[in-house]
Length: 157
Image (cartoon, rainbow, N blue to C red):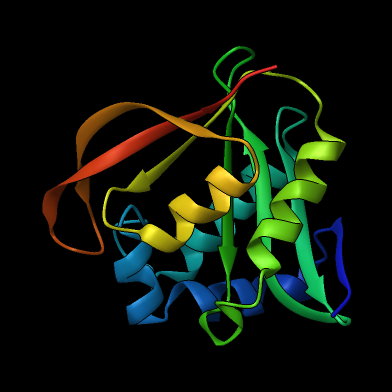
């Protein structure tokens, strides 16, 4: 399977919106927006981040199909990675390959990531890409309606 990153196109947004409204995927991600079904808020968010020169945002393609997104955002020295892969494609190594491609495109270090402590799949992706757990925290997870444990991971230079 060929994994490619490219610039985000307007036509990708409805796909991302559908992916983020998958209840099982949202529960696993945990730290989601308050109301994932709010298209106007979703659209406004994407307009902001696509207009920002501080955000590197990519669409993830698997054999030409839009299967998710990956990004680096934040202030220098505190930048984080994030990614979302359609649940139908989980377990195929796509997130790992997409994150590796993004990390090759964005060479600055350190980079950080956060994941729900019980999200073993995401932690495994990050660790395969060289991140290591550097802190434990608690945060409110909109998708779970509760405060949960999370891990902070770091990719050093």
